[in-house]
Length: 467
Image (cartoon, rainbow, N blue to C red; front, side, top):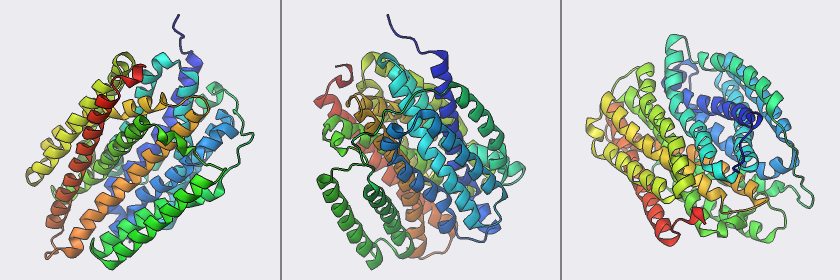
């Protein structure tokens, strides 16, 4: 008889999922407020975008430790810690008088997200029977993917009614409710870390590498793609990455067991997962900026235009999970690759003629494709490893999912900045349109590579997920 998922387990997953949703929602809610924040806090767009980039970067670093943390501490302790940081961070942002204080609050919230998201997926992988992994992962993926898409809508509406501070005032009561729900439903004990030493050097190494990649792209935005600064920092980053790879291959201490990447299919699913989130978060940053600068829409309309696509995408998430449980990964992944490539390509082709309605339609198409592949990539990746290595796979995917968002925001922002400093015109509308067109071309290329990887996996590993 098929094992049923208890009400307690469902509520515990819901509690951690809602905490993750709140953390991620605020992540992109701030995007539509950037033009306002530059004036209110007297900072540049390049500086204010670190509210998103810095948040995602720290979330990535925290997630790199969760393979160890999930084994060391019981789920309820991790959840309680995440709730506290989320609440304190929200209050800090609500009363922030300056940019450094606001950024501090966002970084506190990043710690919460870095713990809650891997915990959510870990509860699913540990407490949900394998026959329902796809369905529950589909629901969890809705949280991870829908929250950043709804963020601009939420941020645009509440900031339009009051100010950007309303973003944080609105979530504070929800955090309290989620804390109560989680306290009474989350159970489980730590697996233990006997024989495992925490690798502080790897944490520092990943933090340096991830930061330097973002900093290197910032050099392109400040000085141009062919500048000596960009070239020098690119070389330094590659060298440091090589040193880290050498260290990881020699040390007995491992933050994450990267040997799981020897599984070829897992690597392909990780690439799809990373690429889809790069496109997802990148567009949630780019489209509101495009709408406000080029189309001259206000913050409310810039946010609302992403809502239909977000809701449609959310609706197909469980459908994709159900198809995966019954038929394997090939069908939902192929649908995802085709629709995302088509959507990104049409954004590029029609970039000069985009309107409010056109953005809604194209974004809806792309979001449907995104949700068909995002949860499926994670589900199919999870069954490629067994036992204690599942926490390594979970941490690796969660870490790269967050960094994909950080890198996507950073790169697409840098492309627009680089156009502005190299353009012969100082017209902000023209420069933003030109930069957006290049961004759409980049996203189309990435979507095409995802589709190629899906086709290759389908040929090389037919119905692997059902084996």
